[in-house]
Image (tube, rainbow, N blue to C red; front, side):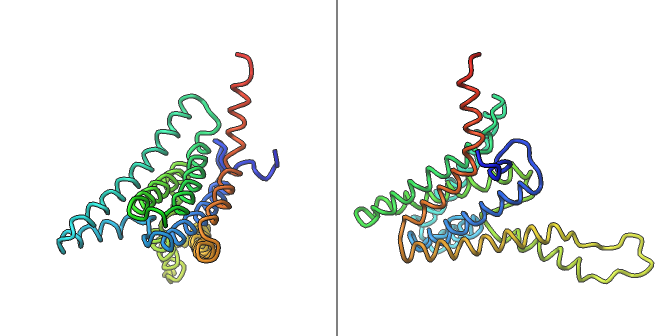
Length: 247
C-alpha cells in the first residue's frame, strides 16, 4: 500500500493526521453542500438555519415545511448516531477500521446521492425529499466522524464555529498586554492555522461542487467518493487480512 495513505484513518492518531483528514473532509463537505444546493435548492450541512426555518415556518402557518425541516434535522442526527455506533462497535471488536467504516459508508451514500439526483427529472416529487434527507444524513455522519477522531476539536460541515474560533485567536493576537501583567494573552497560532485551513478547504470544496454540478452534473460525486475510499481502504484491508488468517 502507498506510504502516503498511512495515518489518514488509522486508530493511532497524530494532530497532523487529524488536520490532514479534517481538511479533506471540509473540502468534501463544502463540495457536497454547495453542489447539493444547486441540485436540490437546500443547504444541508448546517442545522442552525434549518432549525430557524422550522420556527419561521410554524409561525407563518407552513406546517408541511416545518415537518420537512424536522425530518432533515432528524436525518442529520441519525447520521451522527450511525457514526457513533460504527466506531464503538469496531472499537469493541478491536478493528483497525473503526474510523474508516463511516467514511466508506459516506462514499457509498455519495454515489447513491448521485444516482438519485440523476433520476430527479423522472420523479421530482418523490426523489427530491429523499435526496435532501440523504444529504443531511451524510453531513451528520461525516461531522461525527471527524469529531470522534479529533475529540471534538475539528468540525467540517459548518463554518460558523470555525470563524468564531478564528476570530477569538485573532483577537488574542491583536491584544496588547501590559508590561506588568502576570497572565499575558497569547494567541494559539496553530489553532489559527487549523481554522484558517478548514475554512479555506470548505470554500474551495464549495467552488468545486458548484462548478461541477453546474457543468457536469451528478458525476461530480464520483471523485468525492473515490477520495473517501482511498483514505479509508487501508485499515479495512488490514481487518480483512486479519479475518483471513487462521484462528
